[in-house]
Structure formats: structure tokens, C-alpha cells
Length: 227
Image 1 (tube, one colour):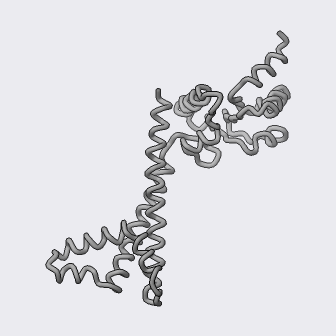
Image 2: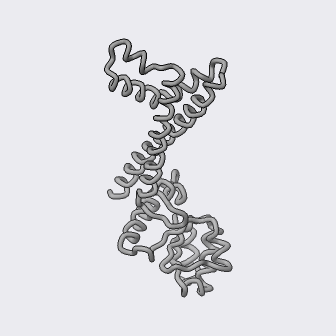
Image 3: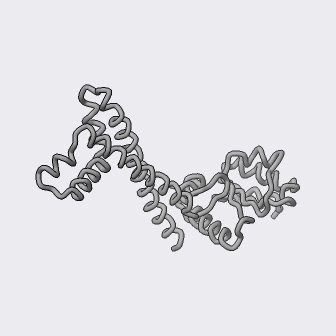
């Protein structure tokens, strides 16, 4: 069989084309032709950088909007990760394929540096969690200043430490309800800071819940990759 015909045939039937980028590869006219055939056949493209190179010309045009996977940073760990990604892609059913972009987004990425590392997720959670606690304390102080729930609990015989704990728990997890309750009435100037802080706390609570769900989903994907 003519080798050109063979390349075209296999490219059109491929689920993904892996382009290994190096200084020498970027000089290849044949690779440019193969890339053009793959793009025309709507084959998913995954650019794997073997060296720290930046595509130019035809390569820059075709690879501008796709995901990159860097091998040169840490080959020992990146090669098995690449194999895991490709294993999922080639085993996906034809009638319901997982797109390469969605898969890499699930596994996590930093710019064009695709990795299975959870560092970015942990970092975001730390920042959000720290902000959440700081805002919760401010919310508690504002709520105490306006309504004095802690004093009321203490007057009813509740231990002062428990009173602070109960109130902190209530305003922290109940910030969305607190925001809605303040919003329903006529907002005074004194209540405005409480409204703003309750809204901010509610947003942070939603972000924490989203990250928690994403982390669980990500662990499920990684377990699937390891099978």
C-alpha cells in the first residue's frame, strides 16, 4: 500500500493525533501535511512538547487553540500520565466520546502545562477557606452588634463558649439565609455592611462546595484511569 494513502487512512480513523513537538519536528514538512489531514478529518489533536519549543508558522496556526502536554518538565511522571489520558480517549465509545478538552479540564491544568497534580485545587481551597473563616468572624461581629444573639443565649443559661460556637456555626453555614432575611425587609444603613458580608460569605460557601464536588469527581476519574 502506498505510504501516503496509509497515513491518510489511519489518520481519518484515529480518535486522537499526538503531535510530538521538538526542534526537529517543527522543521518537518511531512508533519505539516499530516496535521492538515487530521484537522480536515476533525481528529482530536494533542500537542506533546518534548522540548521547550514554541510552534510557529503552520504549526502555530493549527495548534493555537488546542491543549498542550509538556513532557520535558518531568518525563518520569509525565509519560505515565500521558498514557493514562490516551487510554481513556481510545477506550471511549464512538457514539459518546469524551472530548480531549473536557478530559484535560477534569484532570486539571495550569496554562498549557497539563498535569494530574492537585496542587492548584488545594491552593484555591486554602485561599477560599482562609477568606471564608475571616469573613465569617466579621459576619459574627456585625450580627452580634446588630442583634446580640450571643448575649441572648447567655441570658438564657447557655455557656458563653457554647453561645459563641452556636452563633458562629449559624452565621457561617446560614449566611445565605441571613442574606435573604435581611434583603426581604427594609434595609437600613446599619444593616448594609451585614448584607454585603453575608453575600460575600455565601459566595465563598458556594465556591467551597463546588471545589469539594470537583475534588470528589476528579478522584473518581483518576480511579477510572488507574484501572
